[in-house]
Every structure is written in C-alpha cells, then in structure tokens.
Image (cartoon, rainbow, N blue to C red; front, side, top):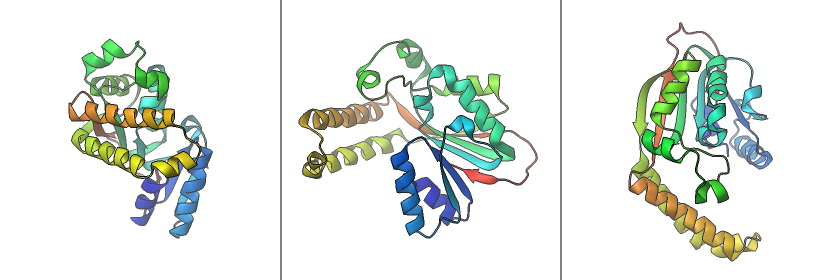
Length: 216
C-alpha cells in the first residue's frame, strides 16, 4: 500500500514499486503524492516478471508465499536479472521448518482453501536451494522476528473488532467477520508457537558495484 516506497523515498531512494492490485496502486499513488514524493516513486501496475532495467536494491515483502513452488526459480531468476552488480536483494518471507514444508506442501489446509489458494510457505533450506541452483544470489544474513508478528496479528484482530461496525457497513457479513477473526488468531498462534516464522533474508551476487535504482 505504498509504505515501503514512502520510507525508501524519504531516505533519498529513487523507487520503482510493482503490484497487480489496482486498489493498491491507486492508494499508494495518493499517499505518495500527499507526501510530496511522487518525483521519487513510480508505482507500476504490472507482473513482476515484466520488470526491466537494473536496480541497486530489490526488496520483496511476503510475495514468495503466493508465487507457488514451481515458479520459485522464475521468481528468483527475475530478482537476479534486475539486480545491479554489487547490489543487495532482501526477501521478507513467512517460513516454516523444512520437514513441515515437505510434509504439507501437497495437502489442502484451511488457509490454502479459504485464504491463500495455491500458496505455500517456504523453508529457508528451500529458498537457498533454489537460489543456489538457478541464480547467482547467495544468502548472506537472516533476521527472524516471528514473535513480533504474533503481536502484530493480535493488534490487527483487536482493530478488526474495534471497527466492526465500519467493516459491516462496507458490506461484509458475519461469516466474513468470523473467518477473518479466525484467520488472524490461527496465524498468530502459529507464530507464537514457533510453528511458523517470518524472516528477512539478505542476498548479494558478490559483483562489482555499478549505477542503478531501488525497486520495492
């Protein structure tokens, strides 16, 4: 919704941000314009596979979970392709242990049926395996903060019920309210129990630096 682009631009970056959501693009453009940063940010409505050019930094936040396992090589190859030599790529991903990923990747769960059809949470081992086999990207560091995400989800659920009448006024019924509440609490429990985690994974190509832009 434009927040990452706003923060990067405020720090001096020239940002290209891509999305497939018309609503996200429109809101992001309004927010960026209101902040007086539209000269630093370009919001493009396009598939990530259509991105061209080279960038000093590539940041992808919780997109890999929806890409689908068979497209992971394409996803990472595109990041590798557009990353300028000497650049840095950061992937924020919700992850699960490798053995759990292997055991559940072909099963239908409540989440894959109702919330994220076709989605799959990767393991760190799966990510490093794909990048080492298909790209020049190499993992340099990891930051784990699942406990913080559990608290974030608790706050989101509280906000949902605090504004329940506003949500209903938008046309959402009680089934939606119960499902969204269950989704937020179900996911919060996963983070709180360390069944799932969220990580920021930093990659480089170990190449000499050159000019480019920032992409988010």
